[in-house]
Image (cartoon, rainbow, N blue to C red; front, top):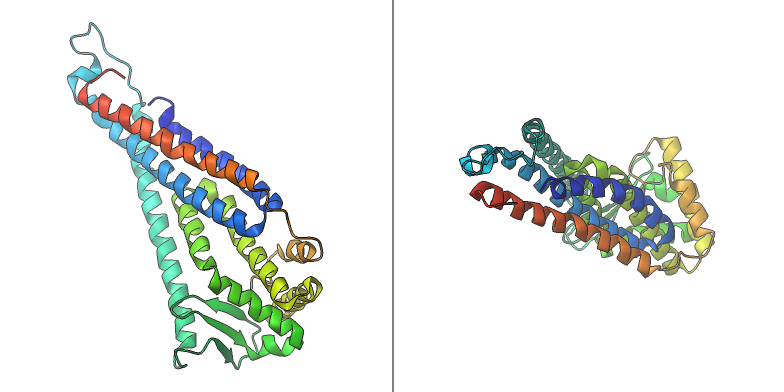
Length: 296
């Protein structure tokens, strides 16, 4: 337990470094799925490790653990200061998760209110607004919310690309992947780079699906660039993430050939994500032996 319980934290750093590389060299669809799963598994193992560190303080209670009857005191597997620090860390994790869930619910409620009053079978909702905006609204059914300002800034082919992009978000449930990565980063702040990579990858994934739907990567790149400029002028924050700093990378990607699958790299990241729960499970066994007075 002296080493295993800390391993998920170290592996979080490794995944944070590997995430952007995976996003750069693996196809967006595969990379987004793999990184979201890896983030959730790693965050779960990291949180459980904090529980184990806090629970290890209980090991001070049984005399057997202190080496009673064995001619001397046994060394604590977890320093008291670390065990004590684990409890406020768990409180911080709980608060961060609570805030992340509240923010997610608040955003979804706001989007649903914008779609209220329209027939249930209406996929496309056009709002009369001078603010250029385009959003996929997840739900049953999913909706596409676009403002008249955004549609007016695009040509017919570019509008098709925009709608295909949003349909890809709905069809592939990108909101689930982003939410999973967001909650994982809330539980383990070391995974924030992974969350940012997943957000970027789902946009790249939707870009590729839009390019395939319209049959022209250049047109999709033009639509992305024009929407980015329109959103920046209008101050919009929700426009396919057109206004973020990754937009130039997305445009460059559309102007080149699609990324290869590189399934071996994705499998390597998945294999990496299995290590934190395995090490956490081994540390859990050590904790049970510690509490029962069995030798470690």
